[in-house]
Amino acid sequence: MVIEDQNKDIEQLIRDLARKLLKEKEVDVILGYTKGTIPLTSLPIVIDKVEDVDKLIWNNLCYINLAKYLVPRIPTLMNEEGQKLKVGIVSKGCIGRALIHLSVEHQIDLENIKIIGIPCNGIINRKKIEDEIGEREIFEISVSGDNIIIKGEDLEQTLPFNEYLNDLCKTCQVKSPPSIENICVGECLENPVIEDDFSDMTEFDSKTPEEKWEYIKNLLDTCTRCYACREVCPMCYCNLCFVDQNQPVWFGKTTAYSDIFTFHLIRAMHMAGRCVGCGACSSVCPMGIDLNLINRSLEKIAKERFNFTSGIDPEALPPMMAFDMEDDQEFMMEED
Amino acid sequence: MSRIQYPSNIRIVRVPCSGRVNPFFIIKSLLRGWDGVVVSGCHPGDCHYVSGNLVARRRFAILQDLLNLFGIEPDRVTFMWSSASEGDRFANLIKKVTKNIKRLGPNKKFESTW
Ligand code: SF4
Ligand code: SF4
Ligand code: FES
Image 1 (spheres, helix red, strand yellow):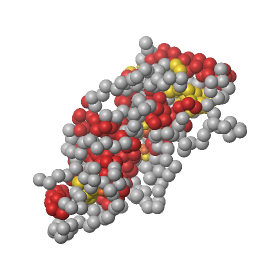
Image 2 (tube, rainbow over the protein chains, first blue to last red; image 1 turned 135 degrees about the horizontal axis):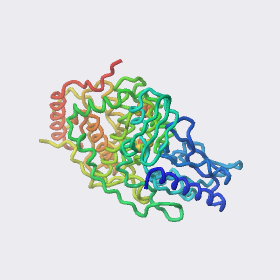
Image 3 (tube, rainbow over the protein chains, first blue to last red; image 1 turned 180 degrees about the horizontal axis):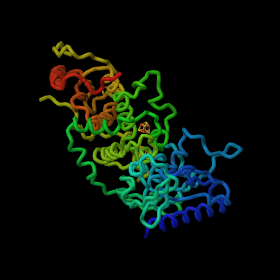
Image 4 (cartoon, rainbow over the protein chains, first blue to last red; image 1 turned 60 degrees about the horizontal axis):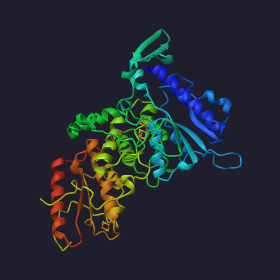
C-alpha cells in the first residue's frame, strides 16, 4: 500500500479509537499528535472532548515520543479536583516501548493509561530534507503516493519517501507497541521479538580509537549544549539532571569539545539499557546532529552484555537495576 | 600494602567500596588533566557491602564500552580487583597500569581548548 493511504488509515484508526474511548469514558483525555505550526513539525495535543477528536492526525513527522508527557518531571494531567486523569495515548512502537520501560522503572502506572496502538510507517528525517533543500524556505510538505512533495518559494521538489526516512525506522522491528492485556487497544504486537545482528555497527566498530575519535568529534562538534535532546527524551525524567548540577559542577559549561563529549558520554552512560531508539532526540536537534550511532551502540551493549532489550518485556529487569555474579569481566585488568 | 613498593606516580583516593565510584569521578579526573584512572575493588564475592562491586562491575563495563565508542584509548581507564591481602598483585597491576599510560603519553583528548 502506498504511504499516503497508510497514513489515512492510521489517522482513521486513531480517531475512531479516541472517539470510542472518550465516549465510553474509558479515558478522560487522549494524548496524540496534531498539525504543527511550521512545516516539518507536528505538535502534541491533549483532547478531552469527543468533538475535538478530528484534530488528531497522523503523518510521517510525528517524531515526538508522547510517553515523555507522562513522566513525573512533566506536570501531571489532573482534573480540577486534583485527581489524576486516565490517559489514552496514541502509540507507535517506540512510544509503547517507552511506556513499558517507564513502568519497569516505576515511573508510570500502566493501569492508568490506555495504549492506542498504531502501525507506524516511519518518520521522515528532517535533517536529510534540509540538507537537500538548503537555505530555501519550505512552505509545505506532504506525502503523495510513495513520494515526499516539498513546496516553497520557487521550489517544488519530489523526493522518494524511503530514502528520506530515519535510518532507525528502516531497521525498526517494533512498529506497533508490544501488547499488554487490558491496556492496549488498536494495533499491538503479541510478544514481539527483535532479531538484531547490529550489522549497521560493524563498520564503525572496526575503526581504530583515533578514527572513532575523529568520527565522533565531527559528529558532535557543532553541539551547542541546548539540551533539547534531553528535554524530549522520555527516559530523561530526573528532577536534577547532571548537566544542571552545580554542587559539584561535574564538567564545564563551555562548547569546548572536551565538555561537549563529556556531556554526550554521560548522557549515553545514563541511557544504556534504557534508550528505546525512538529517535526523538535526533529529530529535535537544532544542529541536525544524528545521535543514532550512539543510541544504537547502547542497544548493542545492552543486548550483547546483558541480553536485554528495553521496553519489550514488562517483567524483565534492566541491566542497571540488577547485577549478577556471573557477569563478563573481560575488561578487568589481570596480572601478566 | 604489605610494605611492597609500587610506582609513586599514582595518588590514592580512598572510597568505602568500588560501588561508591560514580563514573563521573573517573571522567572528572581526566578532565582535570590526570593521564589515567584506576579503579580497584574487592574480588566478586568479597565485597564488604556484599554486592557493591557487582553493581560497579556493570557500570564499569558500560563505561569501558562507551569510552571505546568515543575513541578514548582503552588503557586510560583501568578496572581491577585486588584484595587487602594481595599486596603483590596490587603492586604488579599498578606497574602494568603506569607502563600502559606512559606508552599512551599525556592525556590530550580531555584537554580544554579554553
Ligand atoms: S539537541 Fe543537539 S545541539 Fe542540543 S544538546 Fe542535544 S546534541 Fe547538542
Ligand atoms: S535517547 Fe533519544 S532515541 Fe533514546 S529514548 Fe531518548 S529520545 Fe528516544
Ligand atoms: S567493599 Fe565493596 S568492593 Fe570492596
